[in-house]
Amino acid sequence: MKKEFIRQFYKKNKLNLILSIISSILLGILMLAISIMLQVVIDIASNGTINQLYKVGLLFIGLVVVGILVYLLNNTVIPCFVAKAIKQYKQYAFSLIVKQSNTEFKEKGQDQFVSSLTNDIVTIENEYIAKIPSLVFNIVIFIGALVLMFINNYISDSEFHFNLIKQ
Image (cartoon, rainbow, N blue to C red; front, side, top):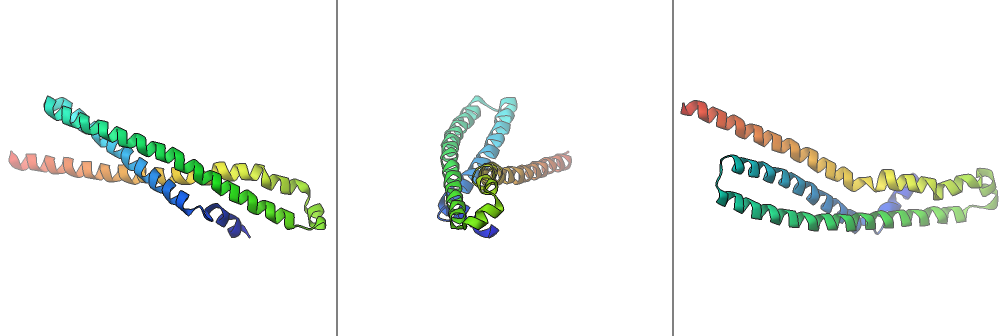
């Protein structure tokens, strides 16, 4: 029974879920790319030429435009996924309530049924459904940040060893 309730979130809603996950992944990658670009801008500002700064600035502007588009996609697709998932869940829960006999309805109490259609749905929407894309985003940011730290550390160590050999 519990699995059937969970299936209602994804039933005929897989495209919205996939688009939500893809947009969250793209948004995470873009945030990491912006952090890399900021590091490059700082490096160029400290010991680069104005021409290099101009080229990186154009690239940064392009990245921001792509970021805005992905952000708009993210803010369009995720609410569609959440709304459809909750709508299907409500319809399924309501259909089960309607199938109950009068005696079952009286035995369990109408408070339980009303709660499952109101309070429980709000909790499920806020604490489960809406957090799926943000969980994916946070995982991408976490893994990406770790990878960037390892790469940065490797480059720093390589330059350090190269400078020692050079001396």
